[in-house]
Length: 119
Image (cartoon, helix red, strand yellow):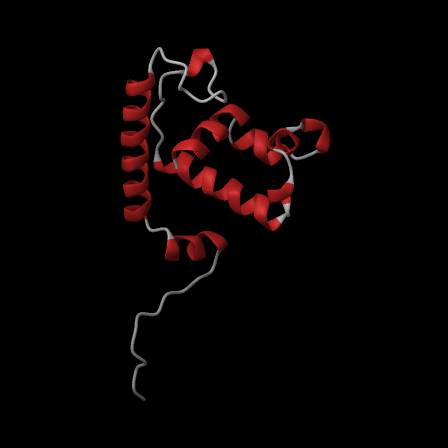
């Protein structure tokens, strides 16, 4: 028997499937450029009114992101799409009375908003 061309990869979990598209190298590049862009943006706009209204005065400094937080961010985007939450207000997704603890447990709404501006 001849082997078919191309690599074969066993996909046993959802994370395995995710990693086929988002390798650690790709995620690290996204993290690097996100942090670089956000730092430049914050440096240019420090003290001005140009910083987005979603960024409160106490968080006008960029807190660098990492691969784990980026994976969590992408996971929340996928989750909202799967549950058709992409047409809901962000406040509703994080509302504890709507019984969706996943969003609050993953990251704060403020951090999600900030990340969505720079990713």
